[in-house]
Length: 96
Image (cartoon, rainbow, N blue to C red; front, side, top):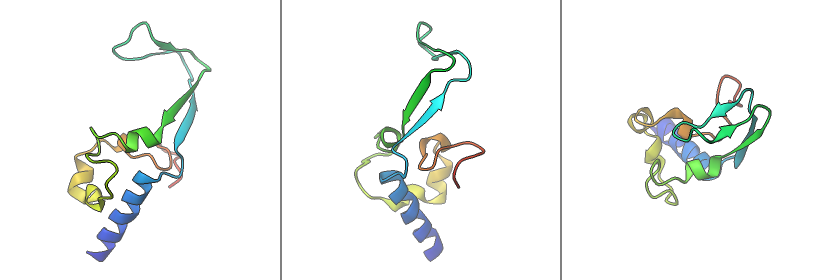
């Protein structure tokens, strides 16, 4: 439908050009990075998450520089982890 296509175009635009290119979070407790037992993010440290890097990762979005609204067709979205699209942050208090 036209609504679905417009929605897909908007979502793909936000993937390519996220409102927030990175997110900052403060570690609330010590965190051992899975697979790297010697790497610990200490409580109180700031972590920067690159939204731009996630949105342009070719393992998640093949041909990431290509504008492709079909990436956001319902069946495509269901097959992808929701944490791979973060234009406004994530979680219960994200912007929208």
